[in-house]
Amino acid sequence: MNEVSLIGRRYTPRGGNFRAKESHISQMINEASGNSIDDTTNDIPELTAQQQNTSSRNKTIIETSDQQRKVRKPLISILIPSLNTAKYVRKCMDSVISQSLTNIEIICIDAGSTDGTYEILQEYALADPRIKLIQSEKKSYGHQMNLGLDAANGEFIGIVETDDWADADMYSRLYEAASKHNADVVLSNYFLYFSFPEEKNVFLEKLANCEYNSLTSGFSNNCALFQVPPSIWSGIYRRTFLAENHIRFNETPGASYQDASFHFMVCTAAKKIWLLRDAFLHYRQDNENSSWKSEDKVWCIFDEMHYYEDYVRHYTDAEKVIPRYMPFKFEKYVWNYNRIAQRHQWKFLVKMREEFLEHKKDGLLDSRFFPKRTWTLLQKLINEPICFYLMSCKGNRFFNSVRNFYFDWRTGKT
Image (cartoon, rainbow, N blue to C red; front, top):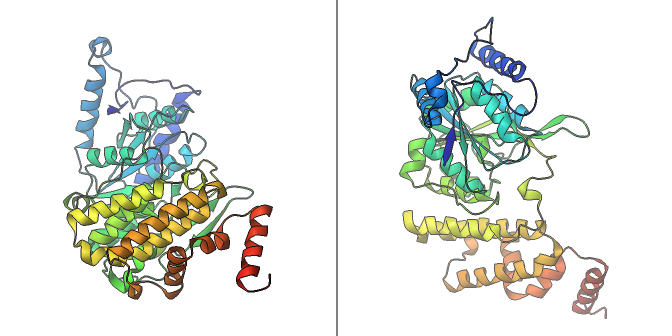
């Protein structure tokens, strides 16, 4: 891990006049904190000649920056993983440094960006002492997030991805709820954000089936939180809660649904969750490089569910938890089956069926925990896999013809 903090030296990044950009960033920081500044050109002290010539220069800079950060313990450490998002990262960073809750720590973890993202983050780190900039040697979302967790000092952990952005009062509102109700986790709804063809935000009430304004757990209200699509960046998590319950990210390659296992672990372990109906995070929908849009990321969801199941067996009452979790695992698998390219669907179906046949053999499938429709679909997968496939595959003309012939034959029309 290579932590880079640029406080204490002048740096001219690739990409134009840094002083103008630094002035813009500093102005936003001071506006958020209610301060004003007259001159931003003298904010950054020069290094001494000895510092400039020593081989331990970076170490000196990091120590100086860490001393500045220790003045006040941050209330929230906001983790920002990045990889080649230069097109969006300024909007993200501007929204974070402008938070009305100013006692925050901002930890940017870059996984080797080559499009200028890292240089942009350096600009922000140079202008704002609350920012830590870490380089990840692995292109792994899970590894990046674990580096951030290890570096965090805040009472709570927040997450913002670099193609998204947050309302200015997001973390003040979330922290206020956590403090007032002594919650280990606070979750909220979010907006679907579109910048093309016209800018718009659509409120998404993902918590609609859950209970607002009362302390709850993942297993309350028929495990409603387990059914919520993972959106781990719409909340905050007490750092000691994560550590005491051994909650870490799966360090599989790339950005491959590592949020799913994290979401399930939080739902399993948390006994004090507070839910807000409001939305603060704007989740971008028009980034074509988003991991969830890749039809060729086929097997990642298996890795994440197995990672969660290993966690359950090590740290919880597996006999109680796993049967209740089975409906959500099946729905997650079916969602990914419908998402992936048609050329992968049969192999995915075979692997999915093998797992649930094993679960059936082990007595882990209990119809009481399944919605009726989901249970019926699972039985179709187990007992009639070809029928399941022909009903659901992304067919071309040939597959549509075969499917029509099959159902005509089953119904006696042929």
